[in-house]
Length: 386
Image (cartoon, rainbow, N blue to C red; front, side, top):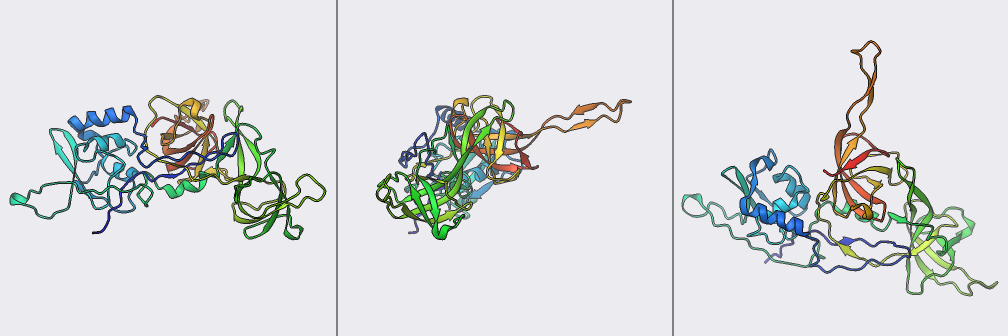
């Protein structure tokens, strides 16, 4: 029998740097972040279904789950708001008891009656019995979530940033080991080049992230420094440990650069690559109202589009958490009113033009993926709850 793989929330790396370069804890496959509020919503919807007005305009009568699907995409097929996954879950709690385990090959069937809608889960069994009726019975097989199960959102878009996007509260890199020279006295180093480093490299680490001098992240409105973004350079592997640290006979450690986002140079700092920690991402709206502004586009870009990363001026202390979906707003333009003699200047209302998905949260700063957008995103654009 061919083994089915679950449409689950893939457990992906979420190692963080907090003060020192420590590894994030690991999470067991059963540690799903289902909040009490989400469970209550699901139970309420399960009892009555959802109003037909909450369905997406072109919600299909049936849909067969495919490998490559995401929970976000499937939710969007049936509901107007893809992040409202508790409703999708609640519509079939009798048959889908765990929202993180929906499998390719299963058929989701939309049942409409008395102005309400429910999902029913079954198998595509053809014409069925008398009158064309079929008996729907789920056949699922649970597996570990580490075996290639399907994510809530396209994880490949954010996974590279989980170890790259690091916000410090101060200059924690100041005392970290540093690159001091390149092979043949080169100024710049790229993938495959040898590099030499001084400092206390941990004895149990062989792979390192390379960072440049952190740059401040300032609130677009107050100009207050909310944290320091460590500029990610790349990675390097230890080839040979150094010796005689602090003496005239010191021999620097030897490394080989294995990945470059930008060219490395003497003075760049080293931090061990964290062990793989895992967490799951469940798209959901914040429980209360929240508003803030985009600090910057990650990297050197001035504007951003779909599938790019932006830094937000809100973090843990403001109630943001991984998985939050936010509405993106574009500031209204200032125009002149041609119907008045003075052609007075007026500001048009802000327009909602996209969605953000928060995937990395620090104390006062967060990083988000632009899921959808209609106009280029720039620093200063604001966001709210969806």
